[in-house]
Length: 264
Image 1: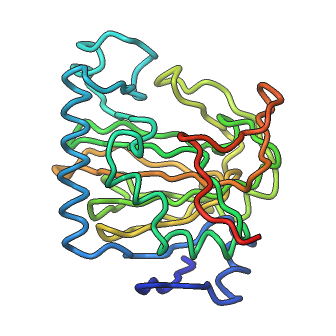
Image 2: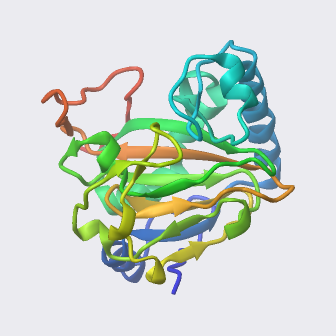
């Protein structure tokens, strides 16, 4: 069963059942939060940034292939899963999005009143050639402590299973699982047969909608073989004082990791 939060302008709080559902399942479907006019503005800006990336003016990766800096290889590969890190540093519009109160109000009910940005990313699956993202837990990539980061996944297109909607396995945020390199690309991780796919839940969304998920919830998206592109933004939030297990350092406040809300 999909857990659905009703999103309204100026949403201040999830109800207790929604909060309980998130912590039981590790994800929550929020639904549409952007207006149609906002969606059109974000689409235009998203397309501009990715066009600049394709032209070599903005750094990007094609996660569907092995890591490479070769622009032609990234652009001409048969599979395309394009990633731009820190969209919020490419555009004031996306800088505003990471601190949008409609999102932060939901995050506050899950993380508490002090919210810091970990990072954000644009993830684009073009029509017909969009590559898959394999079953994984985000913190297998990030290695953060405490492992309680929360992500808002926002789509600028209507999404279904066929063009790359998010899929979750409820309750998997309660245990860390091992990961290996994906067979399709060394840029991706794969939790392999540790994912009980019989329990997977597909979360369709309208354009301008979001889902929220825990950094240890197993999730994936299928290849996009449809004529409809799938443009998405993932915004990852943490509490101040989060530490990197890779370096041992605390992830302090900076331009790239601003403190977005503080209620001391």
